Length: 258
Image (cartoon, rainbow, N blue to C red; front, side):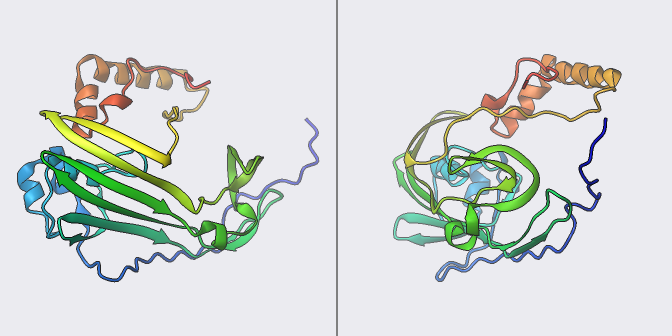
């Protein structure tokens, strides 16, 4: 096939990249929250946390929330800064980067920008249950010009009514604001209510393992291996360990996302 488009160099995404992260909040100075020491919401592990925070099981569950109704992995040391204000438990975390991107090739782009986000939460126990107010903000509208920044091969999204090709959109100033309520109804079972006038939409996203198209035997072998894990219960055991019961599949498939 005759193609007159200039050949893209393999270094299309190479270049200068400088990244700085900082956390600046006066009045907060507690160590990070290490979830790896509290797998399964073990109450002894909860009470031994060095936050100076006393929370019931529902409160610990809520403090493990990410944005919207997403959960952070318990094995991840969450870099939160925590404190107390009377009977309220407070949490803050955030990231800010200064990035200079230099991309070569006909689809590349150059830009100096500063993506960032900040999240705050306040939790309060009510009997065995707990409420948590949560918000996420970003200064991206002020620190990222032209409503996008270059990112080669990033496609499939729209922003401000236009499709994004080789670009990513910035965060909104008000990313999330909402209130959670959690109550333990049984062992390993938590009732959760969530209301957010501004928050994350519910969506389905297909994920999988990328394999060469021509490797049919390898594809089939991995398919059968995953199905075996599902059949003997290992798959569900792993999902339950990391509180991902609702994310499971009944069987492995190939190209089911098409």
